[in-house]
Amino acid sequence: MPKKKYSDEFKADAVELYETHPDMSYSQVATDLGVSRGAIKSWVHQAGKAAGAVPTAAAGHPESAEEELARLRVENADLIDRAKRLRVENDSLRADKRSLRSDVERLEEEREILRKATKYFGGRDDLVILFQFVDDHRNTHEVKRMCAVLGLQRSSFYKWCASRSARAARQAADDALCERIEHHFEFWDHTYGYRRITAELADDPEVDGPVNRKRVARLMRNNGMVGIHLRKPKTTTMADPEAQVFADLVGRDFSAAELGTTYVGDITYLPYGNEGKFLYLATVIDLYSRRIVGWSIADHMRSSLVEDALQNALNNRETLEGAIFHSDHGRQYTSSSFQAMCRRFGVVQSMGRVGSSADNALAESVNAALKRETLQGEKRWASELECRREVFRWLVRYNTGRRHSALGYRAPVDFEVGYASMVDFVA
Image (cartoon, rainbow, N blue to C red; front, side, top):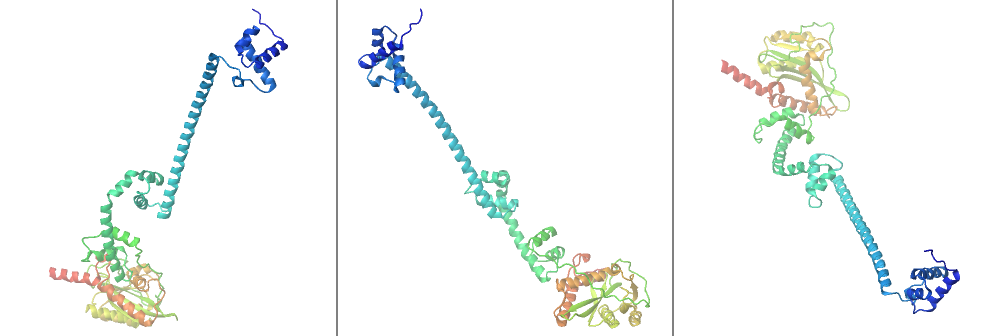
């Protein structure tokens, strides 16, 4: 059936009829005019749009119950769909907000942990300090979070906590041992290194049992106890090119099979005051026991300086008959008066090469130790009296108390006592 066409005038009259009769519905108007209800409704809406308003049932035109119910159902469905969409969007926004809040809180806590840690250990990465930080702040932050931020293994941290009592016991033992180390270090005027300190501790009645020297070295290093280092010596040997030269009977073997058979000697300068003045020390050292059996201090370097030292050695040993005395080529040792004294005492002279300190290394080492341990970095003693007093004190302690690695960390006098006991036992 062909679709009916209605003129604009007919449409306008139909709309006018509907709008001028508020008591009539779309269906009633459509029945009276012989058109479909949808057509009337469409014309009314088009006229309303043209006039700037869309007439609705609220304008006074009642709708049928079915129409109103259908309209309400559509509107309700739209509202429900919109509410669902809004609810989903709202839930999503809430989830995003919770996630962002959680991220912000986590980042703030991590920043707080790092800030505290930086102040706590000053940028150091010592593992023990990091563990201690976590332990100190475990009531403020979670251990898991702190370990993650600081890059630690939780298992390692808990293992460290479990060993707390053993660690405290070791620390207490180290503290007690450190007190004894400091006592001996002070007694020997800061001159002993960890090897000699270890030997001192072995004879210390207040120390329980033997002590590993690596442990002593660690404690001394951690507490700033470092022995005095060597200083470059000043040359005191003045060779006499015309003097008699003796053969080298030692050959850099600074050991002896028996006591009183081989001696070495040397001269060293002793600076004092601010005027560049010097005293001089001559020594006679027994190679077997490392004991300085004779010495002499004077303000000159004449041959009488070394002669007095050899005379003192004879007084301590009672005899030097057949003993070897090794020295450098200094004019004091090549002088006719010193050679005559050696012949009178029955001493056989020996000399190293000219200009070779290694050929008389043991005597050079003793002189270096003397200056290192008495001057302790200073360039000179304050006065002649102080110089004599400090050098005399060191020479006595060298023989009676200072430990020598070559003697099994015993003092020369103690070593000689052991030698005497051995000789008596053999006899």
